[in-house]
Image 1 (cartoon, rainbow, N blue to C red):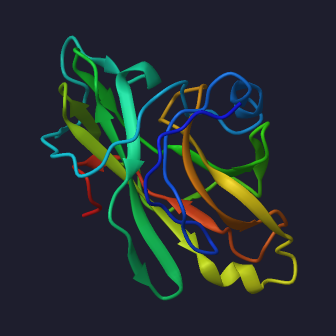
Image 2: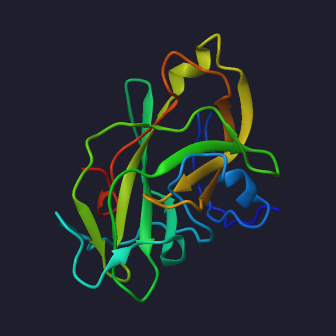
Amino acid sequence: MWHSTVRKGFLIAGGVTAAVVLAGCGQQAAESASPDGSRTSTATSDVQAQAETSSAPAANSAECKVADLTIGFGQSEGAAGTIYRPIIFTNKGTRTCTMQGFPGVSYVAGDDGHQVGPGADHSSDKLPAVTLKPGDSANSSLGVRNAVADDPNCQKTAVRGLRVYPPDEYDSMFLASEGTACAGTTSENQLTISSIEPGTSHH
């Protein structure tokens, strides 16, 4: 069973909804993708960010876990056949935590949440750690290459959204966004993801 809260989103063939939370039956499928994720969350948007960057985590802070976070999409931008949209992580908890590195992101389909196509390639260098106080936000820029839909190896497949693993996590979150993605191996990966940085938009 999939549980989600509806918002606007996008995929390769256009957007429908965005949401968060992959629970219960989604846990099994989450294990088939690369680590970087977590369990439950609620959609967030237009959040104000006051995140701080540092070369090392702040004292008495620990890595952000799924239980600490909500996720949602930010505003999209297009460039040369690729749509870029930040995935925003907001600290909903009561403790300060840190994030660093790259989320694991892939398309998923079906009621079982099985993965469609490869996980996202890294599109930037690894940035310094971001310290999130309660209410602060960080983001990672998701790139969707629309041109790969014309690749003869695409194997177009209906998808329900994105599985997202926060950095260094083994449980996943879910962003619902129905559309079409490539199940086959294309000349270029259909997804890219940048390193976590402070705020709600890519700099």
